[in-house]
Image 1 (cartoon, one colour):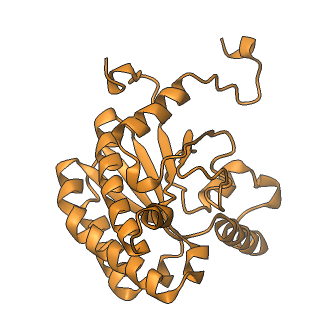
Image 2 (spheres, rainbow, N blue to C red; image 1 turned 60 degrees about the vertical axis):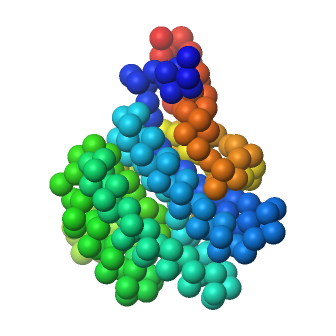
Length: 246
């Protein structure tokens, strides 16, 4: 029996998030330029997106470019932005064929105008697709997201739009980039690092975490299946006892 056949389709994470890490190290190990690592990483994106849709994952969020990534050498940032534009162009047919809707979160206004334009085009073109929502976290930082939420809520309190007594988790959720997405059930990080790196800090409060040594360009279908099988073996208690959830 294959790994895919071992997965319980009735117990899939409704929202899967992935920190795609290890492109640079993959290239270094092979004596290649970092750009080649990033290019090969896009192949893993296609593989994981298609495999997730086939399994029945409803929401997939990929950490594509963080607010901190702007501090990388300009040449690498330029290459990453060019890769983003090319990937959006090249993968539109894949999204359409698989009935996948593209979404984005982050400070998108910081992206080059050409990247913003292509991103908006693909989001608009795929907006009626319903099989899976693929969210790209671009120029994304969770702390910045939370700061913006606090500012927006504070402004509404100041203008008597929201009563301070009414502020709860629901109100905060409504002011996040992810307001239309469910909380993350499973977070995967590749490349052997055991950090969250400022990604969806609020949204992963009760997520299952899965870390793998596999570098992102080497991450294939079976690696995804292993993570989901691990998730399905865990008991999610959300603060309760085992007896209470049975």
